[in-house]
Image (cartoon, rainbow, N blue to C red; front, side, top):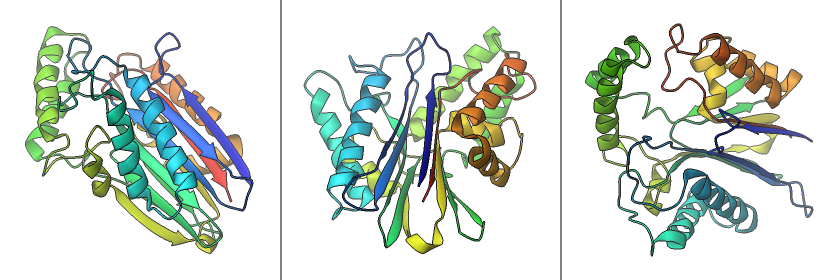
Length: 282
């Protein structure tokens, strides 16, 4: 078995809001992967919470990793729901967990044994499953990408304005408020925040172990290689991971970000993003 992991902050002087972990128990051939991408709140916005996003992702990720590894009778959705509840209980007494900006994260979780490979994806991180014959399956939760047409138009309008301009800042705040209205709401998209029921909204499934030779879990800071900078498709991204590893993937993303620091050629929400990538060859 081959396992490689990289988790790199967008800026070296800013705490990393991503989380990545792999568990390989000694008692068998099973294992699990958990990757989280913390949702960055507006710099000038209240979150109702005294804790940081890295505080939240570290606790949620650790809880999910433990539950996925130990409570194998539970589904991954059950594990995520329990992890959300445990993390919420850790700061319920000090924080307003009903606040729309309460700390939250996207989730990819994978668990395997000799019979099957289970998966769960919530929001805009990605999971890639490679078959022994080389066929690649991409597991995505498309709800954040598939916004209502009016919001997609507003997002395009924001990204078309000069970076750093007052007009872009003002319209960006309007877009942010609109997105917040759809977060963890019917007809919108879901993240792991304080409500365990969000786990039931995840894209989840199971594949026979014999049909999975390798897998990769990535936050959207790593999938920028394909989704933002268009350096190759998912097949080519996976090939890069297999040949040179997650660190090389992220370094290529960093080089692309540095070459377009203001996002003029490749429009994106922020110039640099935390990035996590895990490759497992079973």
